Length: 63
Image (tube, rainbow, N blue to C red; front, side):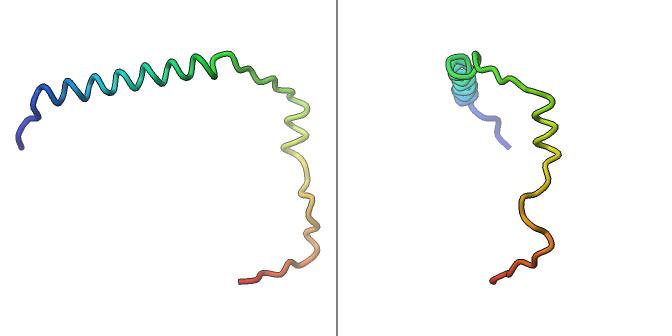
């Protein structure tokens, strides 16, 4: 198998570097300052909730 030309490798490397820089800039502009407050009690209540459907009733399955 032939080795790829050095100019192609160089172009691909620059493309990857530019894409990483752009993704970092987008993240920094839009997501870096976002904070989410987590309340442990509320999260545990949400995770331990019971389903709202009545499991005693049979549900029709239309195929």
